[in-house]
Length: 247
Image (tube, rainbow, N blue to C red; front, side):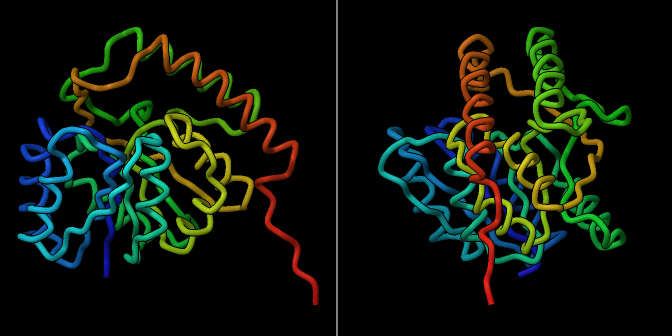
């Protein structure tokens, strides 16, 4: 399998079909050696019914069902660790980045063997926006990245973007050490990758913000502060360290 795409979903029956069906058509035409792993994170609407129907119609689509809602990080980790492709892309259910970037990201990794994964960056000077994020979310994101860099090092423009592609070996190694089950998992990935010695590159994307996004600035800011504290504690407890091997 050339490419795996892991997508966590929760109560997406209202928008997933309209987003995913054109995506699948593009993949079938441009990159047919793929699989999509959809992780249903305890949906209570018709999402599971749609996933069952879709997987019965398309053998390249499979789904994993969790009976209770745990969070985006849980769905992301579950999907990535079950993926089998040479390259593994994790992205959001609203598919905010054009599938054309899949080819761009794969080509970059093929031509630059020194990098282990690439992440879409809305802060990249070459990124474009089909529909921009609200100013309050942009401001909150800038503050978050400053705090993250201060606490964990690195100088990243955008580590929260839901469009990251990994070589399979790097993905499976990194995600073993991702503990946050919710929003902050996107940042924890980057910290873990850096700690384990994997190299990343931020690449520009064409981003389309979804006004129906489930992100709440106030609520998620409080969750982020708590999550960063949890990451610091895990790091202090050496939860991110590889176990030592003895001969």
